[in-house]
Length: 218
Image (cartoon, rainbow, N blue to C red):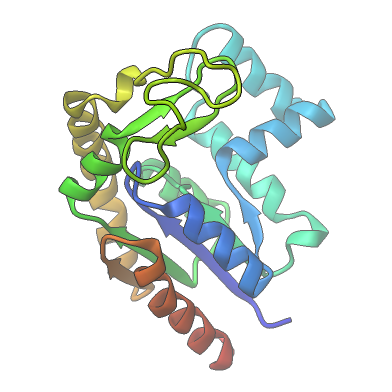
């Protein structure tokens, strides 16, 4: 299998999860996110897993160097090989530099640019059933009865971070953290940016770009 070590970046509500699943399906990437790495290490009872869990239990964020080690451990697994997709990690330039220090080279960074208005529409219209986690959208996936969960009939709610002000704050924070990452990887010539409002429109060009890189033997 030809190698391709890739990373996908995208704003909250930008469709990164959907696109990642399609990339994994079509190109057999080993998929890794920081959350995946943490859960695996905790489940296996490793030293790093216990250390990370202790930070969380004490109410602290897991430090960048520890998060990076978690991810690096996953990339070292035999099943990861040399074709993997990092999903939303690194999240900041400190984590990217930790990856560099750990000798992890990135061949391709898939960077999503989604208009703010589109993200506001996606997240602002989301409604959730708290107990189950079921999610709806007032326009694209409405419940059978407005405001009520299809299965239980219980009220749906808007998450606090899905209000317009909260979404804008999240996007500003994302932009602040991500610009340095974009500059970092653009300077290395591995950044590919994809713009649009719909995953179904963005994905064909993203898929073609990845296929071209694999065909070139990157």
